[in-house]
Amino acid sequence: MPPTEDRAMHSGPPRMLFRGRFVGLAVFSPLLLACSGIPLTCGRTVNKVIPAIREIDPDFDTKPVDCSPKFPSTAPRGCSIAPITCGSIVEGNNDTQFYRFDGNFYVSKACTPEHHGYDEGPDAPYFLEIPSNTWVDIHLISDCADLDIFSATWDRPNQCPTASHTNINQCEADISRRGGKITITTVNKPETHLVWVDGKYGATGNYRMEVKCREYR
Ligand SMILES: [Ca+2]
Image (tube, rainbow, N blue to C red; front, side, top):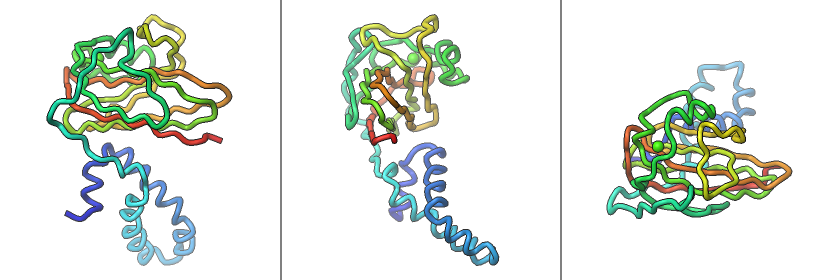
């Protein structure tokens, strides 16, 4: 199989592919503008260009995760398995027997309007500390099960947020198959967030989570 297709197969949700295309269009916009008078020729050119962009998009360097043997499924203490920060790469399995997050929470906090049996899916939460002025991408790689990634602003690693908490002003989610990616940004102050893995309809499996940061502005 050609390297480009192989990377695409493991690269995750369509959203990431769209991002790759977006980068491609941005990089090659002078080419598109220059070709506007001869659409047939330019259409073929652009179609050839887009797959090559995937090669230079660092998002697509993410390797698939091994499904066996089973990674450690550490039980959270309070509401955190471990603290994570920029550059962290954690591997685990969400078979934690820890059930705190469900569809009611996700809907009430506007994480996602969809219920996918999250009350049956065990959760693997981490406490994320982010410096000020930082753009954070958190990738979840889970080729073994349909796991999803969530985050919420939260400052208490020993306590989980619930639907009745009113101090959660930001919740992110990517519920696409085989992992996904969420983005968090900070401006003037450092922030703390809870980041967790949840499984649809009781799904459990190995995962890898990577925290990639860069200066925001
Ligand atoms: Ca859950």
